[in-house]
Length: 173
Image 1: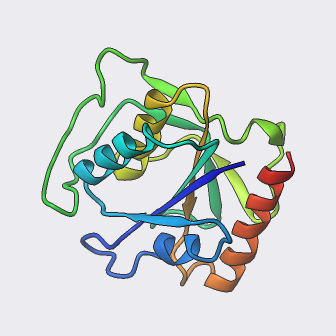
Image 2: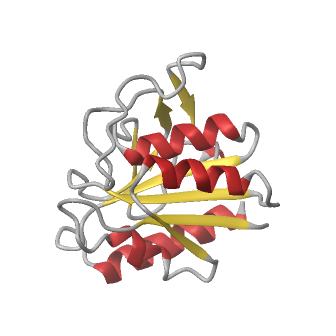
């Protein structure tokens, strides 16, 4: 199974993005995306030209107190500017549904792996944008988004353990 694993780089207020550090702990190749709408769109265009089976996206949430398995991407972007200062409020694609379900978690049958919890709110920033764009661009592919807390809430060594356990659970079926 060919994995795509992405994290995000720094953005205003987060100089050291935990998602960039965490995704580098996997044995799979990790890509760090700039926190811009343009970078996400360009990455999705590149993915359309590649062979892959599953895409696990990882981003930090200042509100998270555990690793959150996002179950839906919503067709909405808020008023927060991306790292390039671009604001793109409104629907991501007005022709598409209000929300799309993440497909990567189906094998869990409602039981979240150790150290993780379910979430239905990926926010209105780049994390949700990336999830929704990925789900709408690649229907039928296994795609999911994992929000992680900051390292002062859950230390990196704990997150690394939970993260790699999550990937093992996904790989085993």
